[in-house]
View 1 (cartoon, rainbow over the protein chains, first blue to last red):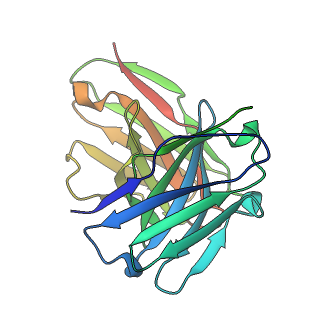
View 2: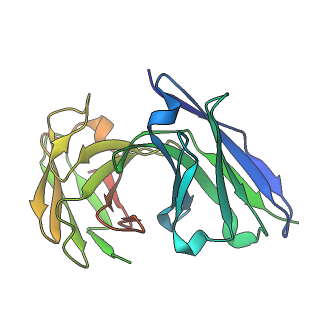
Length: 117
Length: 107
């Protein structure tokens, strides 16, 4: 069965960076886009972008250009998202989700990132 | 960006009741719409894609309809396990955008 296992919660300082992971299993990792979505309490869901692990192609929401960097490691079937220059506005839960064509059919459990000094 | 306006923001209904959640797009999204269910502390789960196609394993009491800019999710015969938040999402154009969500509670 398809599973997306994300890394654990992060407490990070303002101005720093964090890299979170999403390990895929149960399907061919290189055949589907991996999307990343941000959820802040009361602020709904925001799409950050996708990476196609087959060739490393990426597409970002312009709002997250310079903030998020998506990468993927085919050898370990793991997708990564690095968030840089962190501020309190980046405190949120971040999900990875498999893209089936354009909708998201399987989601990771989410990673809570807290930015605090 | 395409704005997705979802209504109502919250909804209280009784077991066995039929509920409808609406989503309006700021422009025509040509059925490029999905609905997700999110239970507290959990990740969203896909219910409906392409506006009216039921995702594998989703109970048939869930259905989607609509076209153009107006879409709806209907839940027939509400069950206790349907208590959750529901989100619509358009994938017709970048950036993909979500509705603000509808919180469904039992009366």
